[in-house]
Amino acid sequence: MMVRVGVGGGGGRRRRLRCRPKSFLAWTLLAAATAYFMWPRPPVLSDLSFNQQNKCPACFGESLCPDIFANRISLANDTTFAERIFNAKNVFRAELTTSRGGRSQKTKIVLKKLGHNSELTALDARICALEGRAPNCIVGHSLALLASRLSSDMGRIDLDKFRAAAVDGGDADAMLCLRSQRLLDKLLARSSTHASSTRTEQALTTLLHNPEPLIFATFPAEEGWPFPPYLGSCGRVAAFEHSGKPLAHFYYSDWLVRARLSRQLLEMALSFTRDHEASDDFAMYLTDWSPDNFAVSAQDGRVRLVDGENIVLVDIKFVRETRGPGWNVVHNSQGCEDGFCFVAEDLCTHVESDLNVYGVCRGLLAAKRAYFDNVFPGGLLHDIPADILRRHPLISRMLAQCSEPSHSGGRFEAAAGLVDMLKHV
Image (cartoon, rainbow, N blue to C red; front, side, top):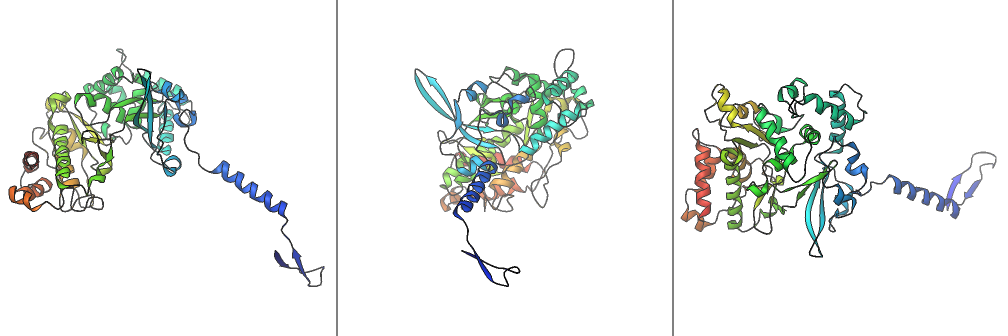
């Protein structure tokens, strides 16, 4: 019961106003209805407002659309409420149902929109602007026109036209050293023959937004690269095989388990830098060695890099042919005081850089001054057992050299020594 003081007409008398049950019920229903319609909704995978297939060919692909529209792909049963509703990164755990021999089989997968919603909106505006149109243009039509304008007589995207149109790949690290037609052709050719059957227009869209699917298709897991298999896309939703638990989950694991993971990370860094035969003379430099970017398979304990957005691709053959100043001198990464940093030009113009080794050692393994010390205090190899130190007394020194070498080339020497040592612990 509410009490209100009256000021007139009642001689200062107090009037008692009662809340009528019907009015209270009406207000309650109105509030509930407002909350229902304004509260964020879980994503419906087959809804065009989520997958944005209607924006194709300004999308990542369409090979996975039959599975999505037939409800063979669904969010994982154990997806939390927060994951369904408040997911700014647009990364969703899901399941793909397939049939074999009359039996259905579920495979864990990860769905990615490869960016925040604001970044996808910015992509639309950028594509429209490149064709001189308003930000709310029909983006699929504009992308088709752009792809046609940038194509050569042979039907491929021409690097010179790509540059002349001021198309620079936006914020994508992969595009920082895109200086050879061979590298652009490699990405487009491998993606077109991939199971996802990515068309040129779709590949161009992916290059402008986040080339992760193209990189994972060009350097596929079945050829030994430490990436999750790329399964295809539907509109602006890309699917990848689930790779396991985050690397940070193993921070408190037995030291020998952490030693095996550390060895794989070192081997990954060296392979990205020096395995030119497997990569067809391309180098990959990872510019974000955050533990969140790695996962460990429960089946075989293999470490995979699950976020390919921050990979700089360098055509080593092009570097040799152009022979810029200091091209054949190994570039030594210096870093910066407040975190992991790099200069793209150093990577683009040298036949080799120790950036990957610098990233894994200084960022993940080192005992001191690790960039992600709030996640990995003391590094992944923290608390080395006494018996390991007795049998391998140089391990701490090698870790320090790998992080902060005393001489040029010291990081590669220390990394090779650590890989050999960790094989025998």
